[in-house]
Image 1: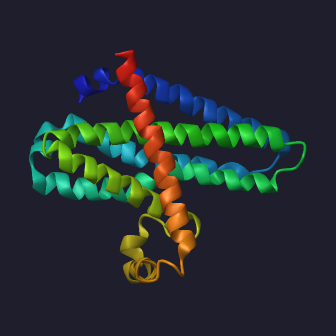
Image 2 (image 1 turned 90 degrees about the vertical axis):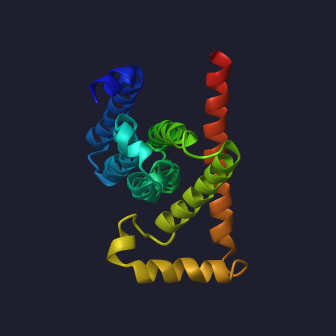
Length: 219
């Protein structure tokens, strides 16, 4: 684990600075307005770190990576929480509650949180991609990650519009499955579902691959 932390020191440092910046913006907003309305951003940010934490630990456990019996359930948990990272984009909708005096600040703060969430998403997907690249053929790996972005977009829809949480798969699996099944059976009736799904899948995948391409150019 120590070697893994050292290899990620720059990444962790940038994450820490980004976290402090988000915390500072939120604290200032609460202090100036004396309103705790945006305190939910702290919870959403915590949820965004869960998939990153999963891949960070998995990346340090080589024996786990070599065992499908361990890797598959961990991958499933990671995928379940992954939509929480880009979910912060949807918090931009709360700008409609902003007053004319705070609109500029709220827009800046929400943009920073959303961008930070996308950055966390990029890091955790890169780590998972690297781990799985040693286990899965390149052709199938590409299809898998296209599916991941689509599932991520669908997860954002379930969370934002139907108010399902990642842990509801354990608390209320029947209700969750029913909501998913009816939208698959009647796609044209629930067109909003697929507009949101493909929209966010496009945003997240474009951001991820643009970041990867930028890193390759720098190298």
